Length: 187
Image 1 (cartoon, rainbow, N blue to C red):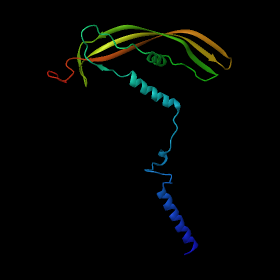
Image 2 (image 1 turned 90 degrees about the horizontal axis):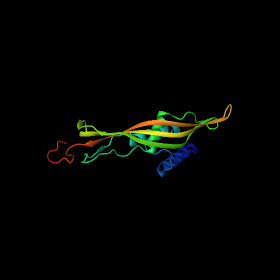
Image 3 (image 1 turned 30 degrees about the horizontal axis):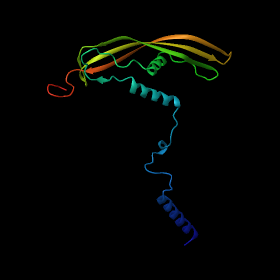
Image 4 (image 1 turned 180 degrees about the horizontal axis):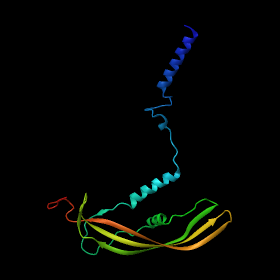
């Protein structure tokens, strides 16, 4: 056998040994360039996380059991987190370039007043059945000090006392009738 033939056989044996030893770089199905991680900006990741957080916490209408006799009050008033997220949507903080232009909200005080709490008469909702809609309306007054720092071209700082009012509605459904599915129930 010639030297070239011996070298080719040796390379083939070496390639075969590497392929069965687990030392190869590809495992499983090869999807080409899609197999490499692609960096995602923190801005987009935070926006997706905030949308998921809002959907999970605040954008769903809970379905509770039937209203029993006696006074019926709304569940919980809006949380401070919900109020501050609503304020950020209504009045976003402008700026955000460190040492050039920064805006901060300091000394935040929140006062929550319940405006209305009433229950609609029963009606049939699609995919739910007979239910009553319970409305709870809140007026949230937010007091804070807005500090604006500008660093260029002429550095200055301003402090302004601000009062904002945000209205938040908490609506939820109460089932009506026999919800256990016993005799006399259509659902």
